[in-house]
Length: 301
Figure 1: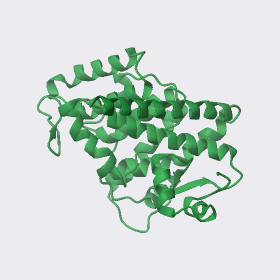
Figure 2: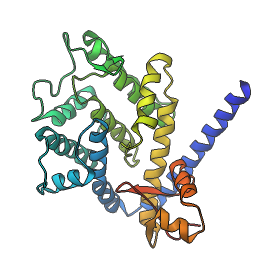
Figure 3: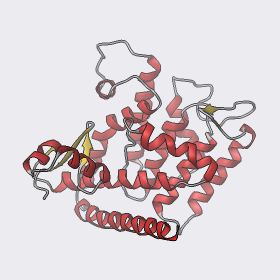
Figure 4: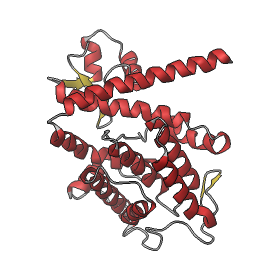
């Protein structure tokens, strides 16, 4: 048992060291490229919005989402609620990009929730659950409505006052607690993912995109485990991988002569496609997703 614990610690330190090296490289190439970095983040908004809404079972495709956000008309009829979900989430994301130093407060969280649910359900927009407003997600029951407000105040205060905890652990713990409390009648998942990126961007780090395609294998299972064992390590590991991907994307876009699909790179370098894909998922190569396709610097060796 001791061997396993020591192994996990070594692996975790290795990941931290890798992230620190990537952060140093990112900060180096970022100097003088702040406007371009913001453009990269703006270009990501349709993917970010699509994935976050799809995790909540929206029927909009990535193409639908991009068209809606561009002001174009869809060729098929879609639920009006889903259109507002896309527009509102995009507006909040843009607001984050314009104010990356926004301080985390319960007041701000409520303001963002109001924006998120405007024209969707104005009766519950911008307020925590109260009275008999219980919520259930699968077999998980959110916190007692009587205590939601105080639980959220405590959560935000603890996050802001924590100085020694590793930044990804802080964000992971916050996300696990936030979704366990489930403070709102609706919009908890989408706002919870917005808060992850608010916390990252306040640290001058790029936002991450939690992927809808792998939600049943990489994301959802973490929520069922946390309330019974209070272990948020899985969230830390997931966020670490996604942050590495976001950093690899920006470093590559700022430095690569040509960016190509990972499958083409694999062929050119005599690497089996499935091996390349596994390396990309583990972030042992500097690959990143663009419109749901893995990409890489053509010149990477």
